[in-house]
Length: 155
Ligand SMILES: [Zn+2]
Image 1 (cartoon, helix red, strand yellow):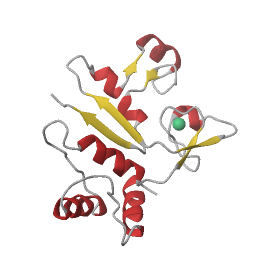
Image 2 (spheres, helix red, strand yellow):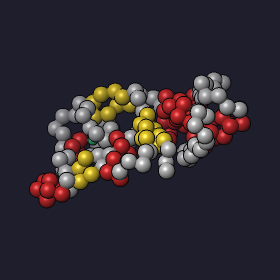
Image 3 (tube, protein in one colour):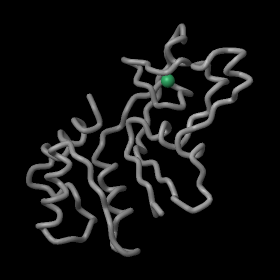
Image 4 (cartoon, rainbow, N blue to C red):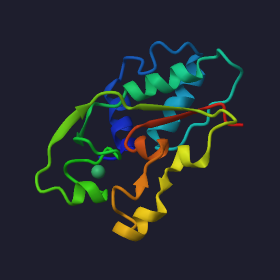
């Protein structure tokens, strides 16, 4: 099940209860947010500091159920469908449960593209191949796979 489907199911199951409890906004704003999420679309939060953007993103991430991931995988591969090189080559898959599905990136001016998308070691790329685990160091975006990615302060 995709993250969008998981979010949609969680919101629809909460009928009667406020899925965004703890986030203080008008009913109209909350309905707009929930409509976007149920429709499986993206949500861009914009506003001055202290208006609850981070709180809202954390509340949305808490709507997601816990998930099973392959132990020690940096990409949060699903045990049913491993997708990275490391997990595809495992003889025996050991899984673990992850409850925190929120990843925050502080978008400071010092942040580098490598911090976001990862980095390739060219020596290991020639030695082992481009998809070997020693070749590629994942960034925060890959670590947010199957989670809510919250980027704070895009400048
Ligand atoms: Zn993996």
